[in-house]
Length: 276
Ligand code: G4P
Image (cartoon, rainbow, N blue to C red; front, side, top):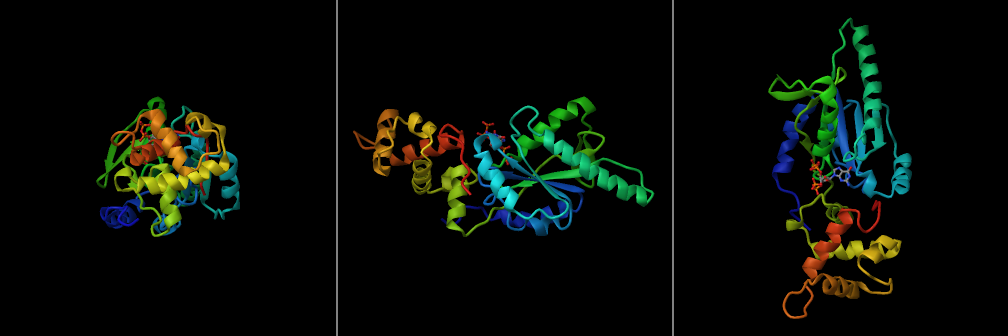
C-alpha cells in the first residue's frame, strides 16, 4: 500500500502555508465516517493559531452517535470549533454560519480595539481529497445569491463575497492524509479518499466486509440478499452471481464484486457507519 498519493500533493504544502496567511479563518473539512483518519497530520502547523472550524461532513452516511462520541472525547482548544454537517443537503451548513457569526464577533471586537473598521472575514476551505470541499463551497455560495456574490482579486487570490461577514477563497486547499498507517489507509480507501485506480480494492473490500458482517445491519444483508451465515468467499460468490459479474464462464470477477461493495458502501446503501 505505497504510492497512494502523488508527490505533487506534498509539494503544495509551501503554497498552502502562503495561502493560509491570507485568511482569518480556516474551514477544515473532514469525513464524519472517519473523523480521526480524515485529519491531515499537519493541520495544526498549517493553521498556526488561526481560528478553525472543523466540518465533519457526510453526516448522512455516518453513525452519528458514534461520531459524536469520538468528537466529544477530543481536545478542542480555544479558537477551534466543530460541527457535524451534510453539505449536500439544503440548509445543511446552518450551524457553520452560526460559528462564523461567533468568530466574526471576536474579530470585530479586536478590530474595534485597534480603531479599525470591520470587514468581512476571509476564509478558506481545506481538507484531504473527496471529503466534500467543493460541495461545501458550492453550498456556501448558494447563500451568496441573496447577498450578491462579488468576485474580487486580492494578491492573486480570487475571493467570493458570501455575506457582509465572510469572503471565501474560491478554490479549496487540498491536504494530504495520514500515511503509513495501514488501517488509516483502509479507511481512506473504503470511504473514497483514495482513488480506486491505485487502491488494492479486494483487500479494502475484504476488510470492509468483515466490519459489515460484525455490525450486521439489515441494509447490508438485504441489499445483497445474504442470510448472514456466509463467509467472505460465499459473499463474493452470491453478489457476483446476482449481478452477473463473471470473468469468463462461471468464474466470479472478484475485482468487480469488490468495486460494487465499495461503491454501494460509499453511497450509504449498506447502512450508516463510522469506521474510526
Ligand atoms: P472534494 O472537493 O473534497 O474532493 O469533494 P467533493 O465536493 O467533490 O465531494 C466528493 C463526493 O462526496 C461527491 O460525490 C459529493 O457529492 C459527495 N458529498 C459531498 N458532501 C456530501 C454529503 O454531505 N453527503 C453525501 N452523502 N455526499 C456528499 P461524487 O459521487 O464524487 O459526486 P456526485 O455524483 O455526488 O456529484
